[in-house]
Image (cartoon, rainbow, N blue to C red):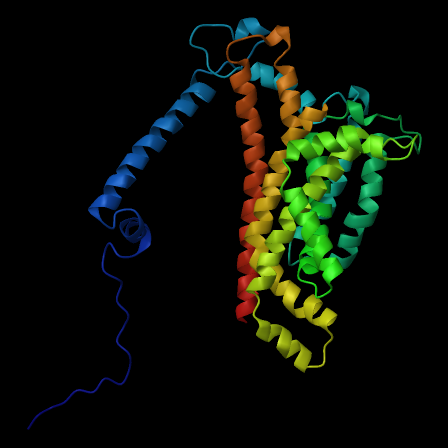
Length: 373
């Protein structure tokens, strides 16, 4: 007589084999999966370790932390000259903005941050009102705070603006204007109307075929010659216009790539439901295209933020320009002054660009999860 055993419930789950899960498993799969990968990982680890130690040694261990002039940093084997950065930091933020009025750009920044942060949080409501405030009301408030002239505020010419304040003004304004203009150009390039399509193609190819430095020179020097007599736009406004138009041409190509990635079946399905072509584009095609184009769009945003350094060629002192100007101070003429200034500038640019890229990844993942539901 044979006795059989039939399990009436699942066997308890056992842990995965050692070395195939957790941090060790990830390392084995991604960094040490073969002898060649292991060798490359070891070489890269040594190189990164050497680089990290060099930066740590220069920026912290051998750095000079206190002092009032170049004498503190003009010593043998000295590292970073942080007293120079500490003294020049307010100028790096505001440029030549009057010291007594620097509360105004600080207030403009705080108001903008208070409105932008809830806009970036998906779980916070009131997005429509927040967007209307940021697009139509906040620019007026910020311009009045920065430029003055009304409400009893002392006027401050844009020639006195500078530093990180100018970098943010130029970059944010360029981003805000280049994205919608780029979307319109991308749609125009795909238009069935020959005139609109030809005009969009001509605009995109013209601006993409000219270096940004040339665009800034043209906007600063040639634009006043073209306009009617007596009409002289502000120099900063001219630079912003040139940068925005330049970025919009690249934005148009990024969006056009997203539009081409959306299958024709999406359009046909929308038309079959009785939607007009405009409604299909606005409600079906364009949202999918923008989601697909997020990496390219963010790449253009990051490039635009870094390209603001080129406004120095038209005598606008952005963040990097004001850092360069501070290095000419004879009071801080030491061997490590320039290295310290550029290192601090690199950190600032990295923080802003890294934040934009991380938020873009967060948005991509959130939209991808919503699309799978």
